[in-house]
Length: 275
Image 1 (tube, helix red, strand yellow):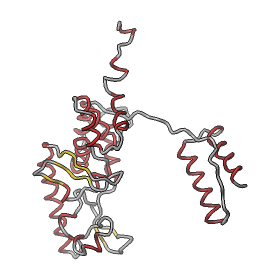
Image 2 (spheres, one colour):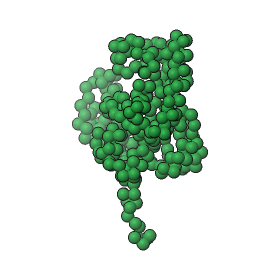
Image 3 (cartoon, one colour):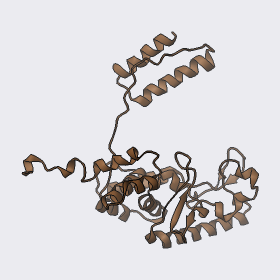
Image 4 (cartoon, helix red, strand yellow):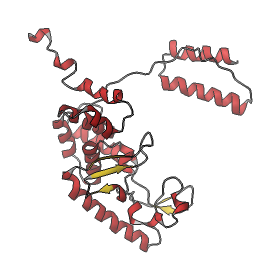
């Protein structure tokens, strides 16, 4: 089988099997790898196969009352992380990868480094979280000092900074705001370091507390970012400002949140309601 048969197979997946776009792409990638790396055969594709459609889903958004109900069920570090997602519009991994140097109490902002799209941005540091964040950093500093006393205290650094600044990995400024509870072996350097918390910690906490709050929606950590954007637009903030806070390259991406506001179909009264 060569290009023509492969394209027929990809069309079969999309039309008859009705697979998702990601499944079709995975099949194509596997076939490309097989022909190029295993069989060592050139493969010419015209890409005329029918493409599986990517579904367009509106984001799940909680009301302010529902957000409060979920947060009320949380405590400790997971509560603080969820509050940062909602209060600053952070993505889950942006929150987990926060370092001490990125929290600016004087300027009331959080610097998000190397986010999706590789463009740094600044977002707001909620005034109500300052004391909690300061307490968190104090606890992390004690943990870091204990690690240093035990001969550890290093974290992984982005890009090639470890080679450029050999001692930076042990500096306080580079430590994670939400460190893991245990040291782990760095697979690249073979050293024991303290990584940030695993994403599953926050994911499980959000799922459990959503159920405890009696909310019957599919809610994950990223839902808080959706709520951040929607609630800012509800409050009348300019969509361009929200776009910048979210680091969206195109305002069309931000505009999806207008579909879940009262400015969308909900603003039109149903004829059954006498509108």
